[in-house]
Amino acid sequence: MTAPRSAEIHCDRVTKTFRSGARTLDAVSSLSLDIKPGTFLSLVGPSGCGKSTLLLMIAGLTGCSSGSISVGDEVVRAPRRDAGIVFQRDSLLEWRTVLDNVLLIPDLRGLRTSEYVGRARELLEQVGLLQYQHLYPSQLSGGMRQRVSIVRALVLEQPILLMDEPFAALDALTREQMILDLQALWWRTRPTVVFVTHDIGEAVFLSDQVAVMTPHPGRIQSVEDIGLARPRRLGIRQSAEFVAHERKIYEMFTRFGIIREPDYAPLAPAGAVR
Ligand code: ADP
Ligand code: MG
Image (cartoon, rainbow, N blue to C red):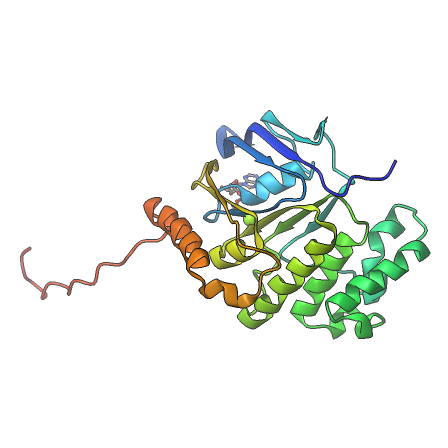
């Protein structure tokens, strides 16, 4: 049987409670979300609303306190082997070359790495890194390192790709190139993607759907469908449709009080009674 190219992810009234001593904290509360196979979905929400926790639960790296998550027909109960994961900080191994880092997961799983070299090189070429395949991570820039991490997460052609603020540590210009590269990589095999970001523009550009989370404890406030034609070019960000999506999401953030307009009224003179 060939592995499915992408998988459906179903979160059903998921709650995650952390306990420390007598105190409990719901990081995620009764959260439901359906992600269709092959969808690129972004999760946006303020810091601390439970985005990373949700991603870890989907990956099976931490359990739900109540409710359930399933991938396809299977309830997630253990770390999943069918998901590539990319975190904000790349986790490249400094003593392995670029190519050997990309081949890490097949190697750890005891697969024949020679069977993956061709695909690894093809993906590296697609993101402009083939000429660096024999260098070590310390010889690369932050953007190049993160590209290697993404290629590593894709080399097994797994049906799910989970990304937790992968571009947050990169400068603005590098991020522009990264979103283009990520779209192009995703386009080829269309895994189901859950992409966590703070950046609303990045979310709209990359996604088929943007799920907006409420402040802590996290729930899904709304899911915005982004119907912009693909592949998208950077110029699309000036289009009326793109701007309308961004504005709608910003308005939600303002409504939650996550973004506040400051008070510009002059201060009363010292000693004045208001
Ligand atoms: P986000 O990724 O949206 O910034 P997180 O999922 O990291 O949010 O965290 C959500 C909430 O859960 C925060 O209040 C955080 O402090 C808390 N939290 C996360 N992980 C743990 C943990 N392992 N133990 C206790 N509290 C945690
Ligand atoms: Mg986080």
